[in-house]
Image 1: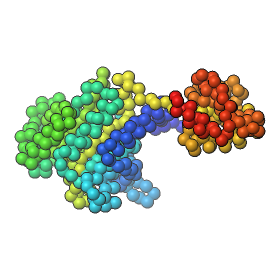
Image 2: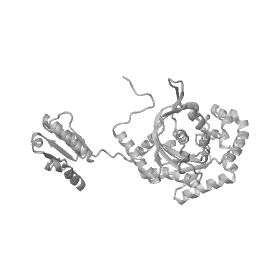
Image 3: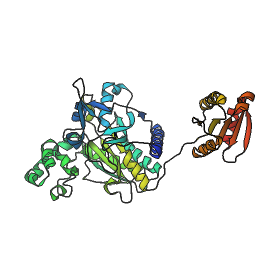
Image 4: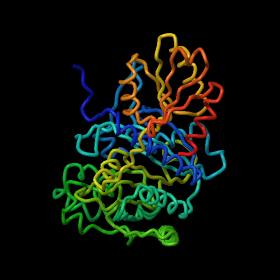
Length: 423
């Protein structure tokens, strides 16, 4: 038997309903913030991620799905959403549009890592990006979207951790300080950190292997190397968060795992019992140099991403039910072969008039059709036999009260409208 690849999963039944509900909620939320949906290819040129995400990022060095196609092109399944959206922004010259350009995405990402709860090799992300403004108010708005989304879902104990990585000048000074500090301690660091030392020493601070290492614990702090521009930006972000009533904690160790971040970085977590480090459900930050790095004009940007699978696990752990359940207005079945075409025409007409309708395809007997209507939770049952076809009269039964009605064919839409409206 052929089985799905390790680290992937099928979405069906209740889970498919949850995914669709989240997407519907996200669409409504994004409309409120005036963000437009953008969809990019699932695979892109490998160079995009090596240039954009960063060579020292674990995603690129260890986790990307790289392959060569039949045209001998080097391609990569997208491991995250930001780089692809930036490529779209540049290639389609969206930078000539009115700014800021505000976009959101929802789709599959791919990373080769050890599958575990809430972390798969194929996973779904909801993300938001805004290009064209370096106003710290936009940083605060991006954070507010994550916080408000989690609140709408009913999650409790929402906490925002923020930090600043400063602008290019500040990072240059901080980088030198880290190089000087870590140089005599290289043998005390893991092999990955020894590689990061030359390419991006800030990534050493984000190391999961050496997170408790005293060498990292005692490393210089970014806040001591911020210039006035960086200090002012971070101060304004904090001020705007307070204005919106969003509580935050400044975490100097927060770096984030992607090389492209500048200024604000953040993680949003919720208080979920026995969830441990997976309490972080959404994260992001500002990336003012990424568009230029990938080949576009100098354009500031800021965004975030949320892992949908981990979010669903969090909702389940908190006993938050987002299952909407299908709403079937009517279920139809025919009493004879001659009535099937009549039933099909009627059901098609009802669907085109906005009703959710299903019908019998297995020629069940009446008893089994009633059972099936109950299983589908149909509000009304439509019964069509030879008499109904001849007289153009539809038998309609309220599946809850069991009350039965005889309705003229030309009045069926009006009848269901009225009855369902009463409910």
